[in-house]
Image: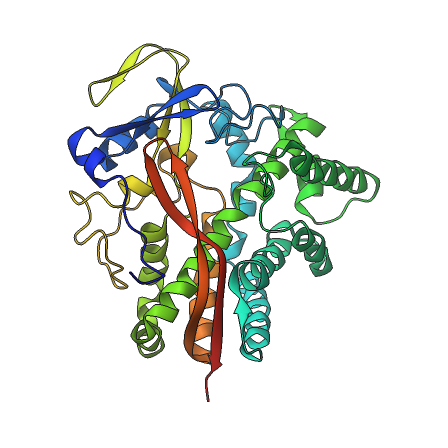
Length: 386
């Protein structure tokens, strides 16, 4: 099996039952596996809410490492709608030409630096710096600040010893508190300052609300972007013809961006909490128990996607749910798409081929399911074009 192959561990359960089961820190979870069922549950916020105890809809649950509510992620309409409206335009900035040009400059420099080396460790040595430096554009803060985030390592909440490390999480929370203090003392054009001057229902956002948006922005777009970028590099290393095709057919880059995120599904799933006794696929779900919307499974549903276990770079119809679905669709989706769009374009321009050297897979365990989500380590060589 090639390094870039990501098997679908949910196929049998999806076909036979439509759901799976797992235990998360003594808090059982029913995993919704089919595309149609997942979209129905995601849309039905009256039955499956996000506005539960802060941290509980995340899988694994973060209730033991934070009590700040991530905004607007951990809210439901109408509150979710109002808070999201405050930041929607800001998170659409990646679509601007100037933003794209600055991102292109950043990614070009990273690719050129990597191409000058005999080997590059992609996860910590390529994807992490790329993600961190690109985040300075999204937050509209100085480029040098990325070095602090790079120093934290790949994972914000996880260490070698545990899947949820409160001490490591507090590094992020304390950092955000300091940056809010700085923005209060010296306003700027950063997202911190914009939030501090934003109003919700006729009042300024509270410090805790600003912190909630910032935690979501940092945590939601870190591991996911790193996985997205790393896995795409692995694929292009395994499939030299695909990089050549992107070079010769630049019009397919937009479709390739969507196909990579569908196939790799950088985030396996996200939870909801039932507001009353109900059922999913004939499976009983009790009030105040959790379900998870398993994006990774839904994105391989053969009733929706032809040849779901293949990467089809120019896939014509691609209703994937890798960025979520309905009102909770990921705020950072435009930023993530632009990163991959620019990366593919820059690689096609500057890299002839990528040699796969070695790597260690990152495996997640969810009850009976073991899913490859990315790599703990991946070494490649970028062969410079020309």
